[in-house]
Length: 120
Image (cartoon, rainbow, N blue to C red; front, side):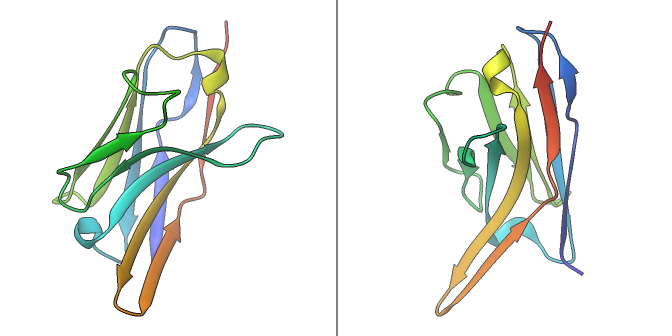
Protein backbone atom coordinates (compact mmCIF):
# COMPACT_ATOMS: atom_id res chain seq x y z
CA UNK A 1 0.00 0.00 0.00
CA UNK A 2 1.44 3.33 -1.10
CA UNK A 3 1.58 5.90 1.68
CA UNK A 4 3.13 9.27 2.41
CA UNK A 5 2.93 10.32 6.04
CA UNK A 6 3.85 13.85 7.05
CA UNK A 7 4.88 14.79 10.56
CA UNK A 8 6.51 17.65 12.43
CA UNK A 9 3.82 20.29 12.13
CA UNK A 10 2.55 22.31 15.04
CA UNK A 11 2.25 25.73 16.60
CA UNK A 12 5.31 27.98 16.51
CA UNK A 13 5.93 31.65 17.21
CA UNK A 14 6.94 34.05 14.43
CA UNK A 15 10.65 33.75 13.80
CA UNK A 16 10.71 30.16 14.95
CA UNK A 17 11.59 26.97 13.11
CA UNK A 18 10.00 23.64 12.30
CA UNK A 19 11.21 20.58 10.46
CA UNK A 20 8.63 18.60 8.53
CA UNK A 21 9.21 14.98 7.58
CA UNK A 22 7.49 12.88 4.96
CA UNK A 23 7.98 9.14 5.27
CA UNK A 24 7.10 7.00 2.28
CA UNK A 25 6.05 3.36 2.31
CA UNK A 26 4.90 0.95 -0.35
CA UNK A 27 7.25 2.44 -2.93
CA UNK A 28 10.79 3.80 -3.19
CA UNK A 29 11.18 7.54 -3.48
CA UNK A 30 14.58 7.36 -5.18
CA UNK A 31 12.93 7.48 -8.62
CA UNK A 32 10.54 10.27 -7.72
CA UNK A 33 10.73 14.02 -7.67
CA UNK A 34 9.52 15.09 -4.24
CA UNK A 35 7.61 18.26 -3.49
CA UNK A 36 6.06 20.12 -0.61
CA UNK A 37 2.85 22.02 -1.16
CA UNK A 38 0.81 24.09 1.24
CA UNK A 39 -2.76 25.29 1.39
CA UNK A 40 -3.93 28.13 3.60
CA UNK A 41 -7.62 28.63 4.44
CA UNK A 42 -9.47 30.13 1.51
CA UNK A 43 -6.47 29.87 -0.81
CA UNK A 44 -5.37 27.52 -3.54
CA UNK A 45 -2.73 24.89 -2.98
CA UNK A 46 0.73 26.35 -3.55
CA UNK A 47 3.97 24.61 -4.53
CA UNK A 48 6.52 25.51 -1.87
CA UNK A 49 9.61 23.44 -2.64
CA UNK A 50 10.78 20.67 -4.93
CA UNK A 51 13.78 18.37 -5.17
CA UNK A 52 14.87 16.06 -7.98
CA UNK A 53 15.08 12.31 -7.52
CA UNK A 54 18.83 12.30 -6.85
CA UNK A 55 18.65 15.45 -4.78
CA UNK A 56 20.92 17.36 -7.12
CA UNK A 57 18.53 20.23 -7.83
CA UNK A 58 16.03 22.10 -5.71
CA UNK A 59 13.61 24.93 -6.32
CA UNK A 60 11.51 27.14 -4.09
CA UNK A 61 8.60 29.52 -4.21
CA UNK A 62 9.77 33.12 -3.97
CA UNK A 63 7.84 33.50 -0.73
CA UNK A 64 10.02 30.93 1.08
CA UNK A 65 13.34 31.24 -0.72
CA UNK A 66 16.19 31.69 1.75
CA UNK A 67 14.06 30.48 4.68
CA UNK A 68 13.01 26.93 3.73
CA UNK A 69 15.24 24.03 2.72
CA UNK A 70 14.04 20.80 1.14
CA UNK A 71 16.18 17.68 1.45
CA UNK A 72 15.84 13.95 1.06
CA UNK A 73 17.32 10.76 2.43
CA UNK A 74 16.61 8.05 -0.12
CA UNK A 75 18.06 5.41 2.19
CA UNK A 76 15.40 6.30 4.76
CA UNK A 77 12.73 6.82 2.09
CA UNK A 78 12.05 10.22 3.63
CA UNK A 79 11.96 13.83 2.51
CA UNK A 80 12.25 16.86 4.77
CA UNK A 81 11.35 20.51 4.82
CA UNK A 82 13.35 22.69 7.20
CA UNK A 83 11.45 25.90 7.82
CA UNK A 84 13.23 28.83 9.47
CA UNK A 85 12.23 32.42 10.20
CA UNK A 86 8.60 31.43 10.07
CA UNK A 87 5.97 34.09 9.46
CA UNK A 88 2.23 34.12 10.17
CA UNK A 89 1.62 33.90 6.42
CA UNK A 90 3.33 30.50 6.44
CA UNK A 91 0.33 29.13 8.33
CA UNK A 92 -1.18 26.34 6.23
CA UNK A 93 -1.60 22.63 5.86
CA UNK A 94 1.60 21.26 4.34
CA UNK A 95 1.39 18.31 1.97
CA UNK A 96 4.06 15.99 0.67
CA UNK A 97 3.91 14.88 -2.96
CA UNK A 98 5.81 12.24 -4.94
CA UNK A 99 5.74 12.51 -8.71
CA UNK A 100 7.20 10.40 -11.48
CA UNK A 101 6.63 10.17 -15.22
CA UNK A 102 7.77 6.96 -16.89
CA UNK A 103 7.04 6.80 -20.61
CA UNK A 104 3.24 6.90 -20.86
CA UNK A 105 2.60 6.32 -17.18
CA UNK A 106 2.51 8.94 -14.48
CA UNK A 107 2.62 8.39 -10.74
CA UNK A 108 1.38 11.02 -8.33
CA UNK A 109 1.11 10.30 -4.60
CA UNK A 110 -0.03 12.61 -1.80
CA UNK A 111 0.14 12.61 1.95
CA UNK A 112 -2.69 13.60 4.25
CA UNK A 113 -1.05 16.85 5.32
CA UNK A 114 0.28 18.34 8.53
CA UNK A 115 -0.88 21.63 10.04
CA UNK A 116 1.62 24.42 10.58
CA UNK A 117 0.43 27.41 12.56
CA UNK A 118 2.64 30.46 13.07
CA UNK A 119 1.23 32.72 15.73
CA UNK A 120 2.21 34.58 18.86
